[in-house]
Amino acid sequence: MENKNSLGKKVQLFREMRNLSLEEVSKRSGLCIDEIEKIEKGDLIPSLTPLIKIARVLGTRLGSFLDDDENLGPVVTRKETHTSITRFSNRDGAVSSDLDFFSLAQNKTSRHMEPFLIDIHPLSEKEYRMSSHEGEECIYVLSGSIEVKYGSETHVLNEGDSIYYDSIVEHHVHSASGEAARILAVIYTPA
Image (cartoon, rainbow, N blue to C red):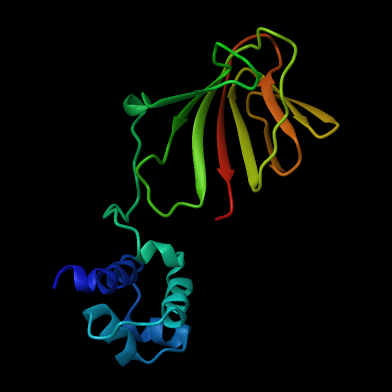
């Protein structure tokens, strides 16, 4: 019986987390209170249409009601836990890392953005590979200097500077000074 109503419990949890009454959700979604109550109690198996309406009112995506992970609230990442490193290189055939990524939302389900602390190591070679993907990126320089190659443009950013761009345009981020740099990057990729 517990699994039968996991969807309804999640709808109720999201509603309560946002301090919304059944009446408020009803008014904003156009659904009747009785229908929302039945969904939350598991007495009604809804179609996608009411779930989409409820998700919009609650400011979440439809998939949030379907995710298995129970960590629906905020995810806190403590400074001392920045040990989960993913290393990347922007060069073909590279044997060393240019970028060390530390996820700031590793355990957050249903996220639409990927926030990272990224340590940028100086390039050992002048050659690098531009990349592009759907979405957007926002970068804030915490320390050092970086160079952002964006299409045919080049932008040098220093500590305290930021840049926001559409990542469908070919781009590359690397150290500008030959010294290490650290950035906060938030990457959005549409579902």
